Amino acid sequence: MAFIDFSDAALQALPTPLTQPAETLDAMERRIVALARGDGLASLKPHRKRGWFLRLILGPTPPSAMLANEQLEALRRLAVRAWHHGYTLPVSALKEARQAGYSEAKIGAVIDTIGRNRAPFRSIAA
Image 1 (tube, one colour):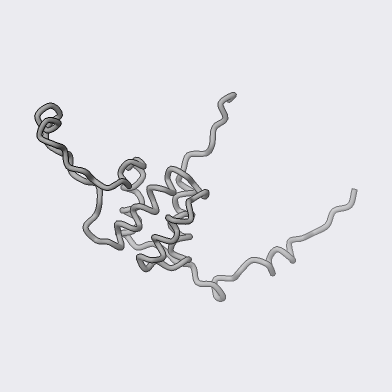
Image 2 (image 1 turned 90 degrees about the horizontal axis):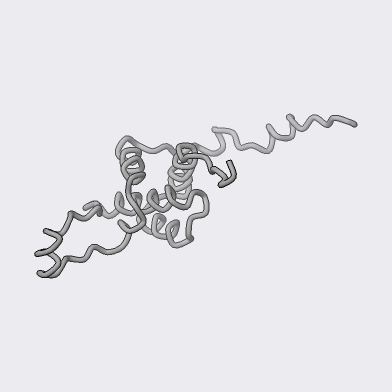
């Protein structure tokens, strides 16, 4: 069996840091990504107030998980979906983040950060 060395071809195919600058997340964005880990998909739905009867039985309406800053809220929504769906995000999540002003590189950095920190997939048989 023959061995073919593809290491030279792989180095030429990979982008260098000089040609494509890597986008990094600042401290606030990293904090929002970390906080989004504990949020469920239900936090993406609009917040409804409870009626008087439900307030009587269940107590006051809990605070909303939404952020006041619209751009950071779009980042939180993207991060929540990425924590739950991994790399198979819906196109609407990417479109919403782009409309909020995030570049493709910043969106990729968020998704890659979450992908590295996510628990690996476990099979049922193991």
